[in-house]
Image (cartoon, rainbow, N blue to C red):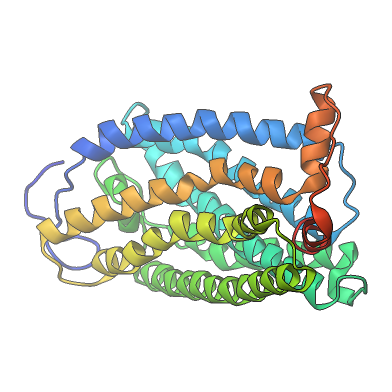
Length: 333
């Protein structure tokens, strides 16, 4: 980038961005994630089309799959743009459109993981009854609301990226936004932080109750199958582990990065460091498209049985005692 002094979008001197790592390492890593994601999620799609949406759990998982597939399909544009393999107009398209779609799908996936946790929690509160929130119709409605609200909140990020794109300005997506666009982007960033940390707190609460139920069921049944108990607890907390490891680092890095882009007087060196931190943690968050299929396999019995059936194998569930069978019916679906 031309290092000559010029006034940037935030009123400070334009900071040349060191793109050597972003142009070489990140596109290679995203390419690997893309191929793994397209393979795993295409397989998951193949399985889910043969499973009816007969429960809230299945509805939420199918919506997660849609989010992952859409996010996966945005990656080639990001790869080409970051690697500078396309025209500068491609970078403008990524900034204005595909990056917005990418983040909509990311936060749709985050909220849906929270809804999966809520669904498992309600399965414990009333395992044999039916609250209205445990009906597939409710799950379809709330999933549609999640998609609609996130899209409406994100739409101004498209509309307000209204500055003329040039080969120089597209190097930083924030340069395409006016003052109102920068303020909206910053506000959306804080809202996304609230969504993530609230969802994480609720997931810890829900799965804490589930873990207690697993432990109490084990004690009451006086089962000697402690290995089965640990196995079920591990499955239960798989969602929390995937959620935290994929998304928490990005949400630690995103706010200071956005603040440096939308109005702070951070030094050029700090801006570059925050950019690399944001891109590294964003890559980690993107790997969630490869992790979600693990949730389908370990927590959704219908998915696993259908997968085995499609491979020409019979699914035979071993009898592991009263504790395992009763608790598994509560924690898994």
